[in-house]
Image 1 (tube, one colour):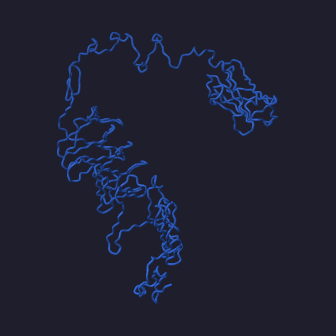
Image 2 (cartoon, rainbow, N blue to C red):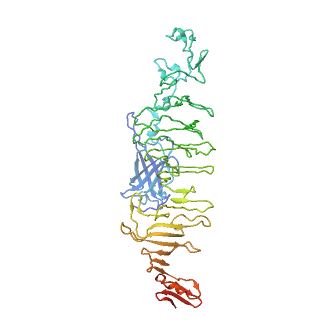
Length: 586
Protein backbone atom coordinates (compact mmCIF):
# COMPACT_ATOMS: atom_id res chain seq x y z
CA UNK A 1 0.00 0.00 0.00
CA UNK A 2 1.21 3.44 -0.76
CA UNK A 3 2.60 5.40 2.20
CA UNK A 4 0.40 8.52 2.28
CA UNK A 5 1.14 11.80 3.95
CA UNK A 6 -1.18 13.15 6.68
CA UNK A 7 -3.04 16.07 5.16
CA UNK A 8 -6.60 17.36 5.28
CA UNK A 9 -6.47 17.83 1.50
CA UNK A 10 -4.64 14.63 0.69
CA UNK A 11 -7.71 12.84 -0.65
CA UNK A 12 -10.43 14.07 -2.89
CA UNK A 13 -13.65 12.21 -2.20
CA UNK A 14 -16.31 11.82 -4.80
CA UNK A 15 -19.49 10.62 -3.20
CA UNK A 16 -22.56 9.06 -4.66
CA UNK A 17 -25.37 7.28 -2.86
CA UNK A 18 -26.47 4.02 -4.46
CA UNK A 19 -30.18 3.71 -3.93
CA UNK A 20 -31.96 0.39 -3.87
CA UNK A 21 -35.27 0.81 -5.66
CA UNK A 22 -37.63 -2.11 -5.02
CA UNK A 23 -41.22 -2.74 -6.16
CA UNK A 24 -43.95 -1.04 -4.08
CA UNK A 25 -45.26 -4.08 -2.21
CA UNK A 26 -47.07 -3.62 1.11
CA UNK A 27 -45.53 -6.69 2.71
CA UNK A 28 -41.97 -6.19 1.44
CA UNK A 29 -39.39 -5.82 4.25
CA UNK A 30 -37.63 -2.42 4.08
CA UNK A 31 -33.84 -2.94 4.07
CA UNK A 32 -32.11 -1.71 7.23
CA UNK A 33 -28.83 -0.93 5.45
CA UNK A 34 -27.53 1.85 3.20
CA UNK A 35 -25.07 1.23 0.35
CA UNK A 36 -22.41 3.83 -0.24
CA UNK A 37 -19.71 4.21 -2.93
CA UNK A 38 -16.76 6.58 -2.89
CA UNK A 39 -13.79 7.48 -5.06
CA UNK A 40 -10.29 8.20 -3.63
CA UNK A 41 -7.39 9.85 -5.45
CA UNK A 42 -3.87 10.84 -4.46
CA UNK A 43 -4.03 14.61 -3.88
CA UNK A 44 -0.37 15.02 -4.85
CA UNK A 45 -0.47 13.13 -8.19
CA UNK A 46 -4.15 12.90 -8.97
CA UNK A 47 -3.83 9.13 -9.44
CA UNK A 48 -6.63 6.92 -8.15
CA UNK A 49 -5.82 4.97 -4.97
CA UNK A 50 -5.51 1.18 -5.32
CA UNK A 51 -4.98 -1.24 -2.41
CA UNK A 52 -3.88 -4.02 -4.81
CA UNK A 53 -6.22 -6.58 -3.31
CA UNK A 54 -5.50 -5.51 0.25
CA UNK A 55 -7.55 -3.24 2.51
CA UNK A 56 -7.23 0.07 4.26
CA UNK A 57 -9.15 1.21 7.38
CA UNK A 58 -11.68 3.95 6.66
CA UNK A 59 -13.92 5.53 9.30
CA UNK A 60 -17.38 6.89 8.44
CA UNK A 61 -19.26 9.24 10.78
CA UNK A 62 -22.58 11.12 10.69
CA UNK A 63 -23.04 14.64 12.09
CA UNK A 64 -25.97 17.04 12.19
CA UNK A 65 -23.71 20.02 11.42
CA UNK A 66 -21.43 20.72 8.46
CA UNK A 67 -18.39 21.25 10.72
CA UNK A 68 -17.60 20.79 14.38
CA UNK A 69 -20.14 19.11 16.66
CA UNK A 70 -20.12 15.53 17.94
CA UNK A 71 -20.53 12.37 15.89
CA UNK A 72 -24.00 10.81 16.07
CA UNK A 73 -22.84 7.52 14.54
CA UNK A 74 -19.44 6.06 13.57
CA UNK A 75 -18.31 2.93 11.75
CA UNK A 76 -14.73 1.78 11.00
CA UNK A 77 -14.46 -0.63 8.05
CA UNK A 78 -11.62 -2.40 6.23
CA UNK A 79 -12.13 -1.20 2.65
CA UNK A 80 -10.77 -2.60 -0.62
CA UNK A 81 -10.03 0.20 -3.11
CA UNK A 82 -9.69 -0.63 -6.83
CA UNK A 83 -8.71 2.17 -9.19
CA UNK A 84 -9.98 4.69 -6.66
CA UNK A 85 -13.41 3.10 -6.26
CA UNK A 86 -14.66 1.45 -3.06
CA UNK A 87 -18.08 0.32 -1.90
CA UNK A 88 -19.37 -0.19 1.65
CA UNK A 89 -22.66 -0.91 3.36
CA UNK A 90 -23.81 0.99 6.47
CA UNK A 91 -25.89 -0.68 9.15
CA UNK A 92 -26.93 0.17 12.68
CA UNK A 93 -28.55 3.47 11.65
CA UNK A 94 -31.86 2.63 13.32
CA UNK A 95 -31.04 4.83 16.32
CA UNK A 96 -31.17 8.02 14.21
CA UNK A 97 -34.50 9.78 13.72
CA UNK A 98 -33.64 11.07 10.22
CA UNK A 99 -35.80 14.12 10.90
CA UNK A 100 -32.96 16.59 10.20
CA UNK A 101 -30.12 17.11 7.72
CA UNK A 102 -27.12 14.80 8.36
CA UNK A 103 -23.57 15.11 7.01
CA UNK A 104 -21.19 12.24 6.22
CA UNK A 105 -17.53 12.53 7.26
CA UNK A 106 -14.87 10.17 5.86
CA UNK A 107 -11.45 9.60 7.47
CA UNK A 108 -8.61 7.33 6.25
CA UNK A 109 -6.28 5.66 8.79
CA UNK A 110 -3.12 6.29 6.69
CA UNK A 111 -0.61 5.10 9.30
CA UNK A 112 -2.66 1.99 10.28
CA UNK A 113 -2.48 3.09 13.93
CA UNK A 114 -6.09 2.16 14.63
CA UNK A 115 -6.71 5.76 15.74
CA UNK A 116 -8.04 8.55 13.52
CA UNK A 117 -5.98 11.72 13.73
CA UNK A 118 -7.13 15.20 12.75
CA UNK A 119 -4.89 15.22 9.65
CA UNK A 120 -6.54 12.01 8.39
CA UNK A 121 -10.08 13.48 8.21
CA UNK A 122 -11.27 14.46 4.72
CA UNK A 123 -13.15 17.71 4.30
CA UNK A 124 -15.68 18.99 3.70
CA UNK A 125 -18.43 16.71 5.00
CA UNK A 126 -21.01 15.64 2.41
CA UNK A 127 -24.79 16.00 2.90
CA UNK A 128 -26.48 12.65 3.51
CA UNK A 129 -29.33 12.60 0.95
CA UNK A 130 -32.57 10.65 1.01
CA UNK A 131 -33.19 7.23 -0.50
CA UNK A 132 -36.53 6.03 -1.96
CA UNK A 133 -37.60 4.34 1.24
CA UNK A 134 -36.82 7.50 3.23
CA UNK A 135 -38.85 9.60 0.78
CA UNK A 136 -41.87 7.43 1.58
CA UNK A 137 -41.18 7.26 5.34
CA UNK A 138 -43.80 9.85 6.26
CA UNK A 139 -46.58 7.80 4.55
CA UNK A 140 -48.17 4.61 5.91
CA UNK A 141 -49.75 2.33 3.30
CA UNK A 142 -49.98 5.37 1.02
CA UNK A 143 -51.69 7.58 3.60
CA UNK A 144 -50.34 10.98 4.73
CA UNK A 145 -49.58 11.57 8.42
CA UNK A 146 -52.35 14.18 8.50
CA UNK A 147 -54.87 11.40 7.76
CA UNK A 148 -54.30 9.92 11.26
CA UNK A 149 -55.36 11.28 14.67
CA UNK A 150 -52.76 12.25 17.29
CA UNK A 151 -52.27 9.94 20.28
CA UNK A 152 -54.01 12.57 22.45
CA UNK A 153 -56.99 14.30 20.82
CA UNK A 154 -60.48 15.54 21.50
CA UNK A 155 -63.92 14.61 20.16
CA UNK A 156 -66.96 16.83 19.99
CA UNK A 157 -69.87 15.69 22.11
CA UNK A 158 -71.93 15.19 18.97
CA UNK A 159 -69.44 12.56 17.78
CA UNK A 160 -70.52 10.17 20.58
CA UNK A 161 -73.88 8.75 19.40
CA UNK A 162 -74.02 5.39 21.16
CA UNK A 163 -72.43 3.32 23.93
CA UNK A 164 -71.55 4.23 27.53
CA UNK A 165 -68.73 6.45 28.80
CA UNK A 166 -67.47 5.35 32.22
CA UNK A 167 -67.70 8.09 34.85
CA UNK A 168 -64.02 7.69 35.68
CA UNK A 169 -63.19 8.70 32.09
CA UNK A 170 -65.03 12.04 32.34
CA UNK A 171 -62.71 14.80 33.53
CA UNK A 172 -64.29 16.69 36.46
CA UNK A 173 -63.14 19.92 34.81
CA UNK A 174 -65.30 19.29 31.74
CA UNK A 175 -68.20 21.75 31.65
CA UNK A 176 -71.64 20.20 31.36
CA UNK A 177 -74.64 21.80 29.72
CA UNK A 178 -78.21 21.77 31.05
CA UNK A 179 -78.91 18.23 29.89
CA UNK A 180 -78.51 16.80 33.46
CA UNK A 181 -81.42 18.24 35.51
CA UNK A 182 -83.74 16.98 38.22
CA UNK A 183 -86.35 16.60 35.51
CA UNK A 184 -84.54 13.93 33.52
CA UNK A 185 -83.15 11.93 36.48
CA UNK A 186 -84.81 8.84 37.91
CA UNK A 187 -84.76 7.25 41.36
CA UNK A 188 -84.73 10.61 43.20
CA UNK A 189 -85.46 10.33 46.99
CA UNK A 190 -88.73 12.00 47.97
CA UNK A 191 -86.95 14.61 50.09
CA UNK A 192 -85.01 15.93 47.09
CA UNK A 193 -87.82 16.18 44.52
CA UNK A 194 -88.46 19.84 45.41
CA UNK A 195 -84.71 20.65 45.22
CA UNK A 196 -84.80 21.78 48.88
CA UNK A 197 -82.99 20.20 51.88
CA UNK A 198 -85.71 19.76 54.51
CA UNK A 199 -83.44 18.30 57.28
CA UNK A 200 -82.70 21.26 59.58
CA UNK A 201 -82.62 19.60 63.02
CA UNK A 202 -79.17 18.89 64.48
CA UNK A 203 -77.61 18.17 67.88
CA UNK A 204 -74.33 19.98 68.47
CA UNK A 205 -72.84 17.71 71.16
CA UNK A 206 -69.84 18.31 73.42
CA UNK A 207 -67.22 20.63 71.97
CA UNK A 208 -69.33 21.65 68.95
CA UNK A 209 -71.17 24.85 68.18
CA UNK A 210 -74.19 25.05 65.84
CA UNK A 211 -75.20 28.29 64.19
CA UNK A 212 -78.13 27.78 61.84
CA UNK A 213 -77.07 24.74 59.85
CA UNK A 214 -73.31 25.25 60.29
CA UNK A 215 -71.17 23.35 62.80
CA UNK A 216 -67.88 24.64 64.25
CA UNK A 217 -65.51 23.40 66.98
CA UNK A 218 -65.47 25.42 70.17
CA UNK A 219 -62.15 27.14 70.86
CA UNK A 220 -60.77 26.33 73.30
CA UNK A 221 -62.11 22.78 73.12
CA UNK A 222 -62.87 21.69 76.68
CA UNK A 223 -63.71 18.05 77.30
CA UNK A 224 -64.47 16.69 80.76
CA UNK A 225 -65.23 13.27 82.12
CA UNK A 226 -63.84 10.37 84.12
CA UNK A 227 -62.34 7.50 82.17
CA UNK A 228 -59.88 4.98 83.58
CA UNK A 229 -56.88 4.46 81.29
CA UNK A 230 -58.75 6.08 78.43
CA UNK A 231 -58.31 9.44 76.77
CA UNK A 232 -61.10 11.99 76.53
CA UNK A 233 -59.57 12.81 73.18
CA UNK A 234 -57.95 10.00 71.23
CA UNK A 235 -56.90 9.47 67.67
CA UNK A 236 -56.10 6.30 65.76
CA UNK A 237 -54.29 6.30 62.45
CA UNK A 238 -53.42 2.97 60.83
CA UNK A 239 -51.18 4.46 58.15
CA UNK A 240 -47.50 3.52 58.52
CA UNK A 241 -46.58 7.22 58.66
CA UNK A 242 -49.82 8.47 60.21
CA UNK A 243 -50.29 10.65 63.29
CA UNK A 244 -52.76 9.66 65.98
CA UNK A 245 -52.90 13.17 67.44
CA UNK A 246 -51.54 16.19 65.61
CA UNK A 247 -51.36 19.69 67.01
CA UNK A 248 -50.15 22.77 65.16
CA UNK A 249 -49.70 26.32 66.45
CA UNK A 250 -48.83 29.04 63.95
CA UNK A 251 -48.40 31.84 66.47
CA UNK A 252 -44.97 33.19 67.22
CA UNK A 253 -44.97 31.57 70.68
CA UNK A 254 -47.76 29.04 70.17
CA UNK A 255 -47.82 25.50 71.53
CA UNK A 256 -48.73 22.64 69.22
CA UNK A 257 -49.71 20.23 72.01
CA UNK A 258 -49.98 21.20 75.69
CA UNK A 259 -50.55 18.67 78.43
CA UNK A 260 -51.11 19.60 82.08
CA UNK A 261 -51.66 17.57 85.23
CA UNK A 262 -52.38 18.77 88.77
CA UNK A 263 -51.70 15.43 90.44
CA UNK A 264 -48.69 15.00 92.69
CA UNK A 265 -47.37 12.20 90.50
CA UNK A 266 -49.25 13.20 87.38
CA UNK A 267 -47.84 13.37 83.89
CA UNK A 268 -48.59 16.26 81.59
CA UNK A 269 -47.88 14.39 78.37
CA UNK A 270 -47.16 10.68 78.01
CA UNK A 271 -45.98 9.03 74.83
CA UNK A 272 -45.99 5.25 74.63
CA UNK A 273 -44.50 3.12 71.86
CA UNK A 274 -46.11 -0.17 72.89
CA UNK A 275 -44.57 -2.57 70.38
CA UNK A 276 -41.90 -4.53 72.27
CA UNK A 277 -40.45 -6.20 69.19
CA UNK A 278 -36.99 -5.63 67.74
CA UNK A 279 -37.87 -2.23 66.32
CA UNK A 280 -36.82 1.38 66.66
CA UNK A 281 -40.11 2.81 67.85
CA UNK A 282 -40.21 6.11 69.72
CA UNK A 283 -42.38 7.05 72.68
CA UNK A 284 -42.21 10.76 71.96
CA UNK A 285 -40.86 12.52 68.90
CA UNK A 286 -40.60 16.30 68.66
CA UNK A 287 -39.52 18.54 65.79
CA UNK A 288 -38.26 22.11 65.77
CA UNK A 289 -37.58 23.65 62.35
CA UNK A 290 -36.88 27.19 63.52
CA UNK A 291 -33.41 28.71 63.31
CA UNK A 292 -33.13 28.54 67.11
CA UNK A 293 -35.97 26.08 67.69
CA UNK A 294 -35.96 23.45 70.40
CA UNK A 295 -37.09 19.94 69.66
CA UNK A 296 -37.88 19.44 73.36
CA UNK A 297 -38.17 22.23 75.93
CA UNK A 298 -38.74 21.02 79.48
CA UNK A 299 -39.06 23.21 82.56
CA UNK A 300 -39.37 22.22 86.21
CA UNK A 301 -40.25 24.95 88.72
CA UNK A 302 -40.13 22.75 91.83
CA UNK A 303 -37.37 23.02 94.41
CA UNK A 304 -35.93 19.68 93.37
CA UNK A 305 -37.60 19.48 89.99
CA UNK A 306 -36.02 17.92 86.96
CA UNK A 307 -36.46 19.54 83.56
CA UNK A 308 -35.82 16.37 81.58
CA UNK A 309 -35.68 12.90 83.09
CA UNK A 310 -34.65 10.01 80.93
CA UNK A 311 -34.58 6.47 82.16
CA UNK A 312 -33.73 3.24 80.38
CA UNK A 313 -35.41 0.80 82.76
CA UNK A 314 -34.15 -2.50 81.34
CA UNK A 315 -31.44 -3.63 83.77
CA UNK A 316 -30.18 -6.54 81.69
CA UNK A 317 -26.89 -6.50 79.82
CA UNK A 318 -28.03 -4.21 77.00
CA UNK A 319 -26.89 -0.86 75.64
CA UNK A 320 -30.01 1.13 76.44
CA UNK A 321 -29.94 4.93 76.64
CA UNK A 322 -31.71 7.13 79.18
CA UNK A 323 -31.56 10.29 77.06
CA UNK A 324 -30.43 10.44 73.44
CA UNK A 325 -30.10 13.66 71.51
CA UNK A 326 -29.05 14.13 67.91
CA UNK A 327 -28.53 17.32 65.92
CA UNK A 328 -27.79 17.14 62.20
CA UNK A 329 -27.21 20.87 61.72
CA UNK A 330 -23.76 22.28 61.03
CA UNK A 331 -23.78 23.89 64.49
CA UNK A 332 -26.53 21.74 66.01
CA UNK A 333 -26.65 20.67 69.65
CA UNK A 334 -27.77 17.12 70.37
CA UNK A 335 -28.51 17.75 74.06
CA UNK A 336 -28.42 21.19 75.68
CA UNK A 337 -28.75 21.90 79.38
CA UNK A 338 -28.85 25.35 80.96
CA UNK A 339 -28.85 26.39 84.64
CA UNK A 340 -30.35 29.89 84.66
CA UNK A 341 -29.61 31.10 88.20
CA UNK A 342 -26.94 33.81 88.16
CA UNK A 343 -26.59 34.29 91.94
CA UNK A 344 -26.06 32.03 94.91
CA UNK A 345 -23.21 29.96 96.26
CA UNK A 346 -24.55 26.54 95.40
CA UNK A 347 -23.35 24.97 92.20
CA UNK A 348 -26.28 24.73 89.81
CA UNK A 349 -25.85 22.41 86.86
CA UNK A 350 -26.66 22.94 83.21
CA UNK A 351 -26.46 19.18 82.78
CA UNK A 352 -26.18 16.42 85.36
CA UNK A 353 -25.30 12.93 84.23
CA UNK A 354 -24.78 9.98 86.50
CA UNK A 355 -23.92 6.33 85.94
CA UNK A 356 -24.21 3.87 88.83
CA UNK A 357 -22.91 0.80 87.02
CA UNK A 358 -19.53 -0.68 87.83
CA UNK A 359 -18.25 0.34 84.40
CA UNK A 360 -20.84 3.02 83.65
CA UNK A 361 -20.10 6.30 81.94
CA UNK A 362 -21.55 9.46 83.39
CA UNK A 363 -21.13 11.19 80.04
CA UNK A 364 -20.38 9.50 76.74
CA UNK A 365 -19.93 11.81 73.77
CA UNK A 366 -19.10 10.80 70.23
CA UNK A 367 -18.41 13.00 67.21
CA UNK A 368 -18.26 11.65 63.64
CA UNK A 369 -17.36 14.95 61.94
CA UNK A 370 -13.88 15.60 60.58
CA UNK A 371 -13.64 18.62 62.90
CA UNK A 372 -16.21 17.37 65.41
CA UNK A 373 -15.96 17.79 69.18
CA UNK A 374 -17.01 14.93 71.43
CA UNK A 375 -17.45 17.15 74.50
CA UNK A 376 -17.37 20.95 74.38
CA UNK A 377 -17.48 23.12 77.48
CA UNK A 378 -17.58 26.92 77.47
CA UNK A 379 -17.54 29.23 80.51
CA UNK A 380 -18.69 32.73 79.55
CA UNK A 381 -17.84 34.63 82.73
CA UNK A 382 -14.56 33.51 84.19
CA UNK A 383 -15.83 30.04 85.09
CA UNK A 384 -14.45 26.66 84.20
CA UNK A 385 -15.09 25.42 80.68
CA UNK A 386 -14.69 21.80 81.66
CA UNK A 387 -14.33 20.38 85.16
CA UNK A 388 -13.64 16.70 85.62
CA UNK A 389 -13.49 14.99 88.98
CA UNK A 390 -13.15 11.30 89.71
CA UNK A 391 -13.21 9.84 93.19
CA UNK A 392 -11.83 6.51 92.11
CA UNK A 393 -10.87 6.59 88.45
CA UNK A 394 -9.80 9.06 85.80
CA UNK A 395 -10.61 12.75 85.97
CA UNK A 396 -10.22 13.16 82.21
CA UNK A 397 -9.68 10.73 79.37
CA UNK A 398 -9.24 11.99 75.81
CA UNK A 399 -8.79 9.45 73.04
CA UNK A 400 -7.91 9.62 69.35
CA UNK A 401 -6.88 13.27 69.31
CA UNK A 402 -4.81 16.07 70.82
CA UNK A 403 -5.46 17.54 74.27
CA UNK A 404 -5.18 21.25 74.83
CA UNK A 405 -5.04 22.94 78.23
CA UNK A 406 -5.24 26.71 77.89
CA UNK A 407 -5.48 26.50 74.10
CA UNK A 408 -8.24 25.52 71.67
CA UNK A 409 -5.83 24.40 68.95
CA UNK A 410 -3.19 22.09 70.44
CA UNK A 411 -0.29 21.41 68.11
CA UNK A 412 0.75 18.20 69.81
CA UNK A 413 -0.74 15.28 71.66
CA UNK A 414 -0.76 17.46 74.81
CA UNK A 415 -0.22 21.21 74.78
CA UNK A 416 -0.34 23.41 77.89
CA UNK A 417 -0.51 27.16 77.28
CA UNK A 418 -0.92 30.18 79.52
CA UNK A 419 -0.73 33.91 78.82
CA UNK A 420 1.69 36.28 80.63
CA UNK A 421 2.64 33.82 83.38
CA UNK A 422 5.07 30.90 83.47
CA UNK A 423 3.69 27.70 82.03
CA UNK A 424 4.65 24.32 83.31
CA UNK A 425 3.60 20.79 84.08
CA UNK A 426 4.04 19.89 87.73
CA UNK A 427 4.39 16.26 88.73
CA UNK A 428 4.22 15.67 92.48
CA UNK A 429 4.76 12.32 94.16
CA UNK A 430 4.09 11.32 97.78
CA UNK A 431 5.91 8.14 98.68
CA UNK A 432 8.94 7.02 100.65
CA UNK A 433 12.21 6.65 98.73
CA UNK A 434 10.88 7.30 95.21
CA UNK A 435 8.78 10.32 96.07
CA UNK A 436 9.78 12.85 93.40
CA UNK A 437 7.64 13.75 90.40
CA UNK A 438 8.39 11.51 87.46
CA UNK A 439 8.46 12.31 83.76
CA UNK A 440 8.77 9.13 81.72
CA UNK A 441 8.59 8.46 78.02
CA UNK A 442 8.36 5.09 76.36
CA UNK A 443 8.66 3.95 72.78
CA UNK A 444 7.73 0.94 70.66
CA UNK A 445 7.82 0.25 66.96
CA UNK A 446 4.83 -1.20 65.13
CA UNK A 447 1.35 -0.03 66.08
CA UNK A 448 -0.64 0.43 69.26
CA UNK A 449 -2.48 -2.79 68.54
CA UNK A 450 0.67 -4.70 67.59
CA UNK A 451 3.84 -3.12 69.08
CA UNK A 452 7.34 -4.39 68.24
CA UNK A 453 10.76 -4.00 69.85
CA UNK A 454 12.78 -0.80 69.48
CA UNK A 455 15.99 -0.85 67.44
CA UNK A 456 19.41 0.74 67.82
CA UNK A 457 19.32 4.59 67.91
CA UNK A 458 15.52 4.70 68.35
CA UNK A 459 14.68 7.73 70.54
CA UNK A 460 12.91 6.46 73.66
CA UNK A 461 12.12 9.87 75.16
CA UNK A 462 13.07 13.48 74.56
CA UNK A 463 12.89 16.80 76.37
CA UNK A 464 13.48 19.89 74.25
CA UNK A 465 12.33 23.33 73.33
CA UNK A 466 11.98 25.85 70.52
CA UNK A 467 10.83 29.45 70.24
CA UNK A 468 8.77 31.86 68.17
CA UNK A 469 10.73 33.32 65.24
CA UNK A 470 10.31 36.56 63.31
CA UNK A 471 7.32 35.31 61.32
CA UNK A 472 5.89 32.63 63.57
CA UNK A 473 6.52 29.24 65.06
CA UNK A 474 8.80 26.85 63.19
CA UNK A 475 7.08 24.07 61.30
CA UNK A 476 6.03 21.44 63.80
CA UNK A 477 8.11 18.31 63.83
CA UNK A 478 11.36 16.80 65.04
CA UNK A 479 13.59 19.44 63.40
CA UNK A 480 11.73 22.34 65.07
CA UNK A 481 13.32 21.55 68.46
CA UNK A 482 16.69 23.34 68.59
CA UNK A 483 17.99 22.13 71.96
CA UNK A 484 17.03 18.91 73.67
CA UNK A 485 18.03 15.96 75.78
CA UNK A 486 17.32 12.52 74.33
CA UNK A 487 17.22 9.03 75.80
CA UNK A 488 18.20 6.68 72.96
CA UNK A 489 18.34 2.90 72.53
CA UNK A 490 21.97 1.72 72.33
CA UNK A 491 21.05 -1.66 70.85
CA UNK A 492 18.18 -3.66 69.42
CA UNK A 493 16.03 -4.31 72.47
CA UNK A 494 14.95 -7.67 73.82
CA UNK A 495 13.52 -8.61 77.21
CA UNK A 496 17.07 -9.09 78.55
CA UNK A 497 19.13 -6.59 76.51
CA UNK A 498 18.03 -2.97 76.90
CA UNK A 499 21.09 -0.72 76.62
CA UNK A 500 20.49 3.04 76.40
CA UNK A 501 22.45 6.30 76.31
CA UNK A 502 21.71 10.01 76.77
CA UNK A 503 22.76 12.76 74.38
CA UNK A 504 22.38 16.52 74.39
CA UNK A 505 21.60 18.42 71.16
CA UNK A 506 22.34 22.14 70.72
CA UNK A 507 22.16 24.76 67.96
CA UNK A 508 24.94 27.40 67.61
CA UNK A 509 24.10 31.11 67.62
CA UNK A 510 23.22 32.40 64.16
CA UNK A 511 22.35 28.95 62.86
CA UNK A 512 19.40 26.56 62.57
CA UNK A 513 21.54 23.41 62.22
CA UNK A 514 21.68 21.19 65.28
CA UNK A 515 24.47 18.93 66.42
CA UNK A 516 25.24 16.65 69.34
CA UNK A 517 27.20 18.48 72.04
CA UNK A 518 27.54 15.81 74.74
CA UNK A 519 26.79 12.13 75.27
CA UNK A 520 26.63 9.84 78.26
CA UNK A 521 27.26 6.40 76.81
CA UNK A 522 25.55 3.15 77.78
CA UNK A 523 28.63 2.37 79.96
CA UNK A 524 28.43 5.73 81.76
CA UNK A 525 31.33 7.41 79.94
CA UNK A 526 30.91 11.11 79.19
CA UNK A 527 31.96 12.53 75.87
CA UNK A 528 32.05 16.24 75.03
CA UNK A 529 32.51 16.86 71.33
CA UNK A 530 32.58 13.12 70.63
CA UNK A 531 29.85 10.50 70.22
CA UNK A 532 32.04 7.58 71.31
CA UNK A 533 33.87 8.42 74.57
CA UNK A 534 36.50 5.87 75.56
CA UNK A 535 37.19 7.23 79.07
CA UNK A 536 34.98 8.31 81.96
CA UNK A 537 35.41 11.83 80.56
CA UNK A 538 36.65 12.49 77.06
CA UNK A 539 36.79 16.02 75.71
CA UNK A 540 37.33 16.57 72.01
CA UNK A 541 38.72 20.09 72.34
CA UNK A 542 40.06 22.31 75.09
CA UNK A 543 39.35 22.16 78.85
CA UNK A 544 39.93 25.19 81.02
CA UNK A 545 40.46 25.58 84.78
CA UNK A 546 39.90 28.76 86.74
CA UNK A 547 42.97 30.99 86.97
CA UNK A 548 44.13 31.70 90.56
CA UNK A 549 47.30 32.99 92.27
CA UNK A 550 49.38 31.04 94.78
CA UNK A 551 49.98 27.38 95.50
CA UNK A 552 47.02 25.33 96.81
CA UNK A 553 47.04 24.53 100.55
CA UNK A 554 48.28 21.09 101.64
CA UNK A 555 45.02 20.46 103.50
CA UNK A 556 43.23 20.27 100.14
CA UNK A 557 45.26 17.21 99.12
CA UNK A 558 45.68 15.10 102.26
CA UNK A 559 43.11 12.32 101.70
CA UNK A 560 42.44 9.65 99.09
CA UNK A 561 39.09 11.22 98.22
CA UNK A 562 40.87 14.38 97.03
CA UNK A 563 43.25 12.64 94.62
CA UNK A 564 43.00 13.97 91.05
CA UNK A 565 42.26 17.58 91.93
CA UNK A 566 43.84 20.22 89.70
CA UNK A 567 44.61 23.91 90.16
CA UNK A 568 46.35 26.56 88.05
CA UNK A 569 48.66 29.13 89.69
CA UNK A 570 48.46 31.86 87.11
CA UNK A 571 51.05 34.08 88.81
CA UNK A 572 53.74 31.36 88.92
CA UNK A 573 52.65 29.63 85.72
CA UNK A 574 52.28 26.25 87.45
CA UNK A 575 49.69 23.43 87.14
CA UNK A 576 49.06 21.51 90.38
CA UNK A 577 47.69 17.93 90.45
CA UNK A 578 46.83 16.13 93.70
CA UNK A 579 48.48 12.68 93.92
CA UNK A 580 49.20 10.25 96.77
CA UNK A 581 52.36 12.14 97.77
CA UNK A 582 50.59 15.51 97.80
CA UNK A 583 50.46 18.33 95.28
CA UNK A 584 52.56 17.73 92.17
CA UNK A 585 53.38 20.89 90.20
CA UNK A 586 54.74 21.37 86.72
